[in-house]
Length: 230
Ligand SMILES: O=c1[nH]cc([C@@H]2O[C@H](COP(=O)(O)O)[C@@H](O)[C@H]2O)c(=O)[nH]1
Ligand SMILES: [Mg+2]
Image 1: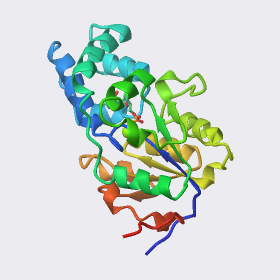
Image 2: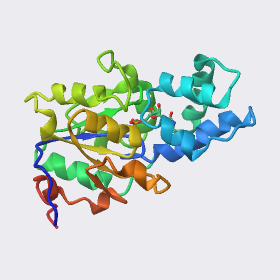
Image 3: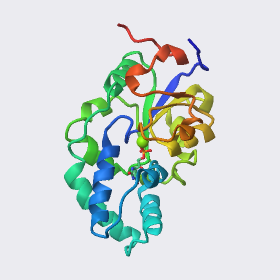
């Protein structure tokens, strides 16, 4: 079994990695775009995943020539999010992994590009207990210290600094679903486990340290972390 460099701290992305919110984003965006006769393609989605909300709005407006301002687009999607996001599901293997690392006192934190409002919509109804296991959370779209969204490294560098014991980037392992998130983790000097949407072009997953079909396949001991008990 190939092993990688040992790590001591773990940073988790949220959308598409812990929660099934990527499929919900697709529905929400397509519902808005239907009013303009536009199609939300997976190719365009891949470009946006990991962006901060204002970056996403600007990009989708220019790519699809929408007659909207970013504020108007975000207003329209916000209505969709309020309907769709409260009933999110945890991705396979995510709960087991987060609980396992927490039980073994491995420092874990959340590093999502979402805003805190968007996080609360997605988590508050069903998943508060699971998310309470993180030492702390960084919300890229709501955090002054996160100057630039993924694929820039800002959110992961800021997150590493927020652990009390201040680990070096190489001591941190990132879990991501998005191409931009993998680029951000690599730019931060961190190893990254990618669990991509199955439609993701294989050549776009090449930068990841390890690519899995699901978190259920993850073996913590590969990165020097405590193995699962069973
Ligand atoms: O179909 C989409 N998925 C995701 C995003 C963006 O990606 C962020 C989630 O990124 P992450 O998984 O890194 O938290 C969302 O907040 C949103 O801004 C998007 O615009 N469109
Ligand atoms: Mg994600």
